[in-house]
Image 1 (cartoon, rainbow, N blue to C red):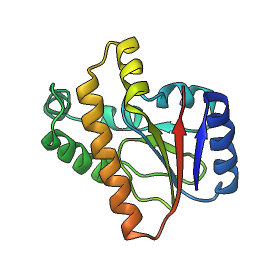
Image 2 (image 1 turned 90 degrees about the horizontal axis):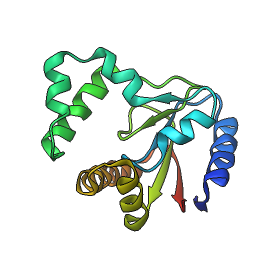
Image 3 (image 1 turned 45 degrees about the vertical axis):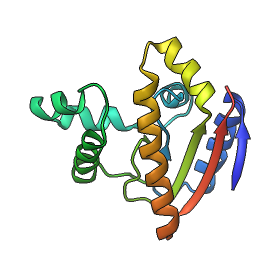
Image 4 (image 1 turned 60 degrees about the vertical axis):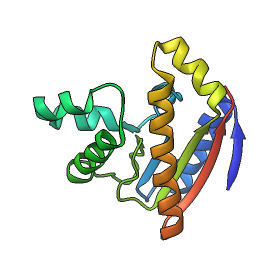
Length: 158
């Protein structure tokens, strides 16, 4: 299912998906700088990957994944850490850049133009966010081909 949404519509759509799948484990997948944290603050009982992962990292792991520019090697290392350390719980959707074991995946897509605007406002590097987006899309496509999950696709418009 593909839906184009504003911020308010995104929140309403996510709440409807979360209610429909309240007994399932849900990953909300999106790149950096697309507004995951903003959405998280407005929807109760959701979990941010960073809040779950960072406290569990060693100093060396944190330093490695914080390097700039973002590379696929860093992404692969983060994937490994996430698969080892993070689990999704039913009724606690995980906002993430990586699909972990779950029954439902919601992809929050964002146009390159809007992503560039968000990066500029936040002082983040567009190239890094774009590279993360490419990795997120690869993960999305891999899991869609593999099947076995319910997928929702939302296009963010603001």
